[in-house]
Image 1: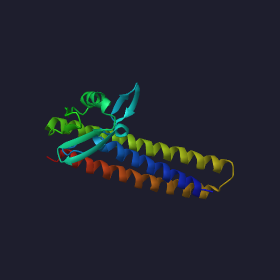
Image 2: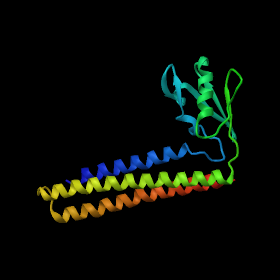
Image 3: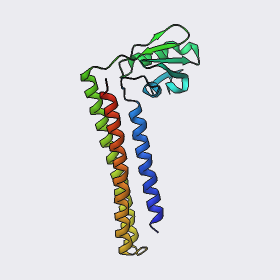
Image 4: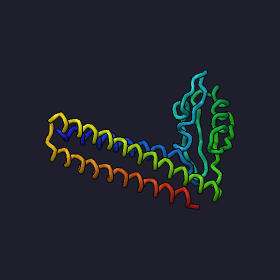
Length: 185
């Protein structure tokens, strides 16, 4: 009876870790990474659309992103969206492609990004703990209704705690890697 709850909890926690890792990819480091501008919203005929649906993004050099817009009439809108984004980028267009040079980060800006990484890591930990709380509640409800024995409920709580700790360790390891990447000059 507890196995489905464990599978649910593990699946949800794994998704939280994956979401956290994807979220970190949007945080700038010294190197150019297409994920940095993937999710920038561009007004496409009045509808906000992610940039990765309107253009091909590549990183031919460590400090340069190249954006090839599929619909050339939208070059201006894409360039404007890149310029107004929170990354502080300054794109340049030659009519065919948009080149986005990635300037080196200052020490102060690096520290801000490390704070952002830590904040997102804490949000991921909270999400994982909330999943644990919800699943413990489900186990307790089953125990109260007599569907499972108290010993099984206690074992379920212990297993759930181990799964939670393992996923929080993954979040911590991912955050530590990203912090090191951000602080690398």
